[in-house]
Length: 342
Image (cartoon, rainbow, N blue to C red; front, side):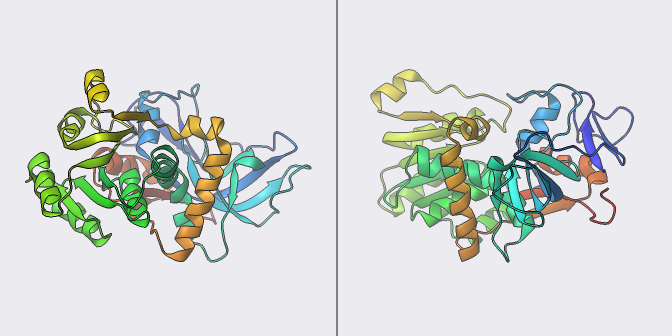
């Protein structure tokens, strides 16, 4: 089968050559069913997340032994099942979120980790859903219990989890403020119905948001959704209300911010760390309920999956470049050629 594997740690955005940390193999062994409840899925499309990029760099919290096949969210059809497999049958459409392994034409997982994709649901959208939208949904609805009376501030709002967060915020009825860089990203976020967008290329984030809050007679921000970190976290903490909640989702800036404990004490802030991978292991029922609700929302048109770039596996370095260089708005995907994937 066709597969991309990581043979050494390094930057996967570099050109595919002998020095690249990743390599595309046309005849990688097809994985076998490894338990009675295992299922083999023929992958049609898989998602790229910033976490996948960090994992190949060796800078992610989960570090699989080398060599390994990267990749997390994916979707397509069930190809084979173990003798005790009961949830689905061969030919069913499914999606899932793996620790790694989806950058291949086939992947094997336990049936408990799969989600049925409703008939008529776009498989590309289903493959883009679990990681980014699952992160934002569980974080906003389960951890902070976002309500319509609150103000939600989303940093890195044009990225995968950011686009998910602003849409989920609007579904909840919250006032949503988004921070991004560049006119194209700003216009896209406005098209999603975001209440206020700050363009970091030409606006001061604090001044812009304060002016907006004043125009709406709002005191401040109730929930800070932060996949960025660094100086932007420090700056936007000035906007938080007493009793606000901070969601620490990631550090795309490359800098881990300091959240002063004395400020959390005096202002009664709650800081939530959120990592979907471990959450799925420790609270699997919550994750499953989240994905089922998201699939329902997608069917109803309450949320939309925006695919910014799509590449073949042989163009994986270009896909990672789109992530690295902040070119993407929404999701970056890798699609497999059904005719040539085995």
